[in-house]
Image (cartoon, rainbow, N blue to C red; front, side):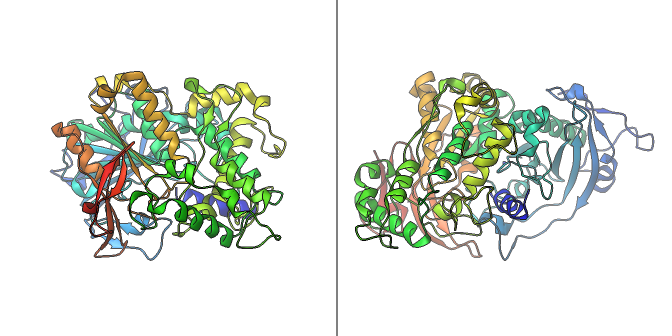
Length: 568
């Protein structure tokens, strides 16, 4: 891989989650260890070197080994100078805890291990939170951050006494290698698809029993993007493992998304690419056509679905040659391609074959770090190259790499001549592994599970309509009353993939916990836009509406949620 490709990988991955357990305890370890709360230092030190049997892991696996265990002092919240997202600049306050690092050995000796981190607070609330990953993973998720969509001024789960944990999903990124190369190994691919999250969940339960003498009373999974897909995967494949799941902007219809990334990238070649001024031209035209449709001219398109009928990109056509204030025919076709659904031409998992289009709204969302609007995810600052270069959009790098390593299984595959029909069997195989689109959540509901899904409607890393269509499929399968009892879908207009551009932060995780522990369904939630620096001032707020409702202005302060109401 070129140095340029590696740079894209680093940027993209920055973005974008009751049985006996121990065996082979080293002879030098004490025969029985006191619970963590009573002798933190002694107990934490004693965890290092302990192993967990494959018998206690719910899928075929090697031994899990605790490589290190370190007792860490409590720390205050701090804010970093920069980060890939606003939330990533905030390092939450943490309690005294034992940080456990370890790995799970593979079954296939040629497959990489699964790394994990488990954070054991000395004062435990008897619940746990598993964090999902991002991108193609390959980076250890620490479980120390804020949860997706959280208010910046609220404590993290670890700060509230939850055990938290995460994994690298069973492969490790290496300098000079594409982040998708692991998919050439079958076990590594299955681990990335679903198995690593289940295995690490079981290992974490075993470690909690070792540390506190009991297993957790309640277990939660939180994730955004790839981590959001992982959360939905847990509900579908392992319905008894989690009591509550929060999934934000999940890359749920994964196979369709990667092929859409290829299609939309190719649309920018041969004259289709647009410079930043032209991206802003489209953005402004969308606002002119659709911003005030909700009664408030506030630079937020509340109803992007309705906007599809009002916005016509062909009205921006150049009449006197290319210019920054108009679009050429190839550029118009590129925008129309992005907005159009992608018919794969062959069946995918769970009867799907069409990936929904993206937009309009959020085209020129200001970039935070490497993220924001078309320029980050689609157009980049230069037309797609072969192979990709850092100036290209992230979706091109992700989609092209997935095509080569997951579907064609040929790192040299020519993206310009790739045809899905030539790889139909492999596409279906990967779709069955990766696409979290099974609408039958009856087992998850029967186990008492609760699920909250948040889609940001200005998202160009993936189509928010994929999650919206999934919720509709679950309703069609199970009935509206049944779905309303355990599954809530919310949408945030104008918000991009990482939560910027419009009000995108809400108390969703506290609402999920209250739903699980008290049976109190979420209601009356507010979504806010706030500074990512103390005192985390709130700039504006909106009601967080359940789909298909969207905010409508009813009078008053245009920046206040109370001035809006959720309406169809």
